[in-house]
Image (tube, rainbow, N blue to C red):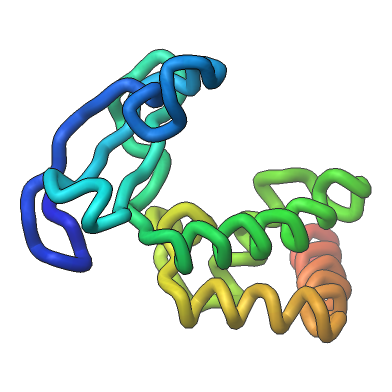
Length: 140
């Protein structure tokens, strides 16, 4: 894996390398070898060395956090289950299933999700999507 910002290789480090020795243990992180000069990193799935998404700098990490906070309201409030939300994200971003995760979105895609969530447009998409799914289920 290469850093998307400086094209240098990445290296695997424990979370304490990013957050300090006194911070909770968040497992492993992939970092740009130029870290902290190049501030790109990504955490790993718990108990693995498999990245949660793509490397992100501070600006993109902030956008992803904001997008997640808004997007996760859909499933946390019971409007859809989590899997349905990600199918919806796939539809809304026109991304293939592998890339339709906030941890893989770029700056512009995160901004689109944030805009959709703040405008209520995504809620309209949910209603249309639910209606389409129920009509499809009845037709079977």
